[in-house]
Image (cartoon, rainbow, N blue to C red):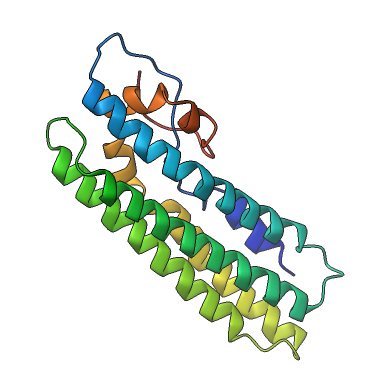
Length: 190
C-alpha cells in the first residue's frame, strides 16, 4: 500500500547539498571557511533526512496498519521539513560565498531550501488528514502523496546545484563534514 511512497522517496526526494570529492589547488581561505561553516551545519540535517527516509521505507510493508504508516510518514515529513529549514538557515547565516554572483547563489539556495521545508510540512498535513479507517481511501490518499513527492524530488534542486558549482563545490568537497553529508550524487564538476 505504501510502496509507491517508498519508491518516490528512494527515487531522489532527498535534495541535500550533495557534494563530490573534487579538490582544488586554489587556496581561498574565505571560501574554505564559508564551506566549513555550511558543511558542519548541513551534516546533522542530512542524517536527519536519511533517518526519516529510512523510517518511511521500513514502514512500507503491507502488514503495517494505515495508522502506523500515517504516524511514521507524518513524523518523517516533519523531520524532513525541519531539516531543510535548518539547512536554509545555515546557508543564510554563512552569508554569500566569496565567488562571482555569490549573493544570488546563496539567496536562491536559501529560497529553495525553505520551499522544500514548506513542501514537506504540507505533505505531513496531507498524510495526517488521510482516513486511516478506510484502507482503500487511505491507499488512494497515499498515491496522491507519492505523486506530490515524486514532483518534489524532480523539481527544485537547480539552485543547490548552482550554489555547488565551481570554486564553491571544490571548497565544500575539501570539508570532511561535506564528504560524509552526501546523500545523492552531485552534478558539480571538479
